Image (cartoon, rainbow, N blue to C red; front, side, top):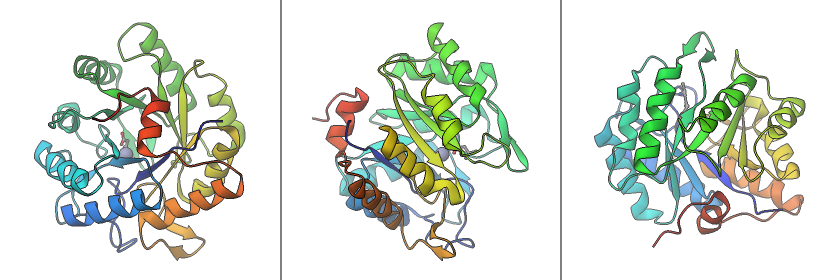
Length: 277
Ligand code: KMH
Ligand code: ZN
């Protein structure tokens, strides 16, 4: 079994300091959280950015500022900027995160429209084709975010048609978003059994599903995403003090189950990315 790749989704677009005061908004806070996650064992940081007051933004300049600041203190980390942004943003607004210099190695590509709590997260076919075209043109490896079972078939069909980058594909199964596919081992197995041979996958369990899904992925040979974007609690009723605390809990689970933790360089190799010079 490959070593475990841990992704830290340090910020998200929806969670607030009112829910957990450690949610980062400013550039300094985002750097602090990225470093805590990497120091604890994360190979990848999935990045959203905010204005200083916490408003989610996809501003190219803010992504540029945050990515440069993170890479200064975590020079090896793999960054996966969000192209999902926040519900209600336009496709052009969302794509700005792929405009940074240097071009990101990876970016998320959301694989279909879905309910998102009380809202609708809009990912029409034309939007997904535009995002796929951008990533093909710029050599960005997508992380395919599947919130619903049907999203997997959608993106596999698009890959077969050459509309989005193909093999080796990296999937992130985001399970337990209210209104979307529930976080069960059964659903995870169904998804994993349908991905092409040679693909890699990660699971994100939302809310209380974070650590049960992490344990399942560790045992199944998949990878794990945790972080404030998905879950604010270290255990029932105990707010996490940092993203690093959430990553450290996954590291403990993996160690108990005998699975090694991938460095960023090892993760690049597993994901088929070019080594960083
Ligand atoms: N904020 C969610 C509506 C992504 O990063 O690509 C979408 C999201 C997905 O977080
Ligand atoms: Zn995200």
